[in-house]
Length: 290
Image 1 (cartoon, rainbow, N blue to C red):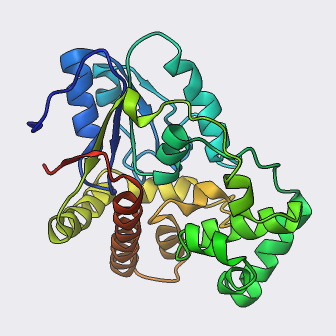
Image 2: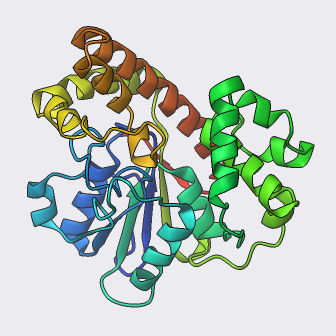
């Protein structure tokens, strides 16, 4: 890839963009040319039970440059943006230059703008929220949020809506109020080179379709089979796009062609939400089109 701008070899690099846009390839190219450690900023790539289905860097790629925070979390563990910030912090305090790449916009926003220190959700309230969503959908939780919080979050993302509702229910304060008390960021945008993949929709959709076919060719179905016995759709690791569809196929509920079609549609919808987030939150990032 050829960038339309220079990258200083002594500054941290952030590379954000929608799924399947080519972020990992650019990160690897920079690391090989200038040095640095590639750090994951994808909420599902942290889990150890999905490599193929989440497009984690291959073992060959990992041998070409140092990588961190990939596949290090057990499938049944909780993992939040707070966990990620605590784990990424040491890489900002010395050592190889960090090259942070991924598609979880909230991670980048928390890193460069700060993260509100919100108490964890008690299990009983999480269970209450899960039951509400199962019975009436996440829209029932959205209807109970305050207007300021509802205006700030991604209202099409069930996980974000549920998190906002849980904060309100557990603390008695809206998420927006907690956010207004956000401490200083770990890595301000001014201190790094921030790159956003701003790609054409049709170009990206074609890549998404091809990539899922490639995932099946490289063992995604076997990977899903390894998760079948203790499959729990409530786990965060189970939110890997394509996982519910492949599990449904393995249970005999849908054909493999239908699973692939549904997974591809879900990926396109996810990429659309990512592009919306990036364009609204990352105004000052350098735009890059492969």
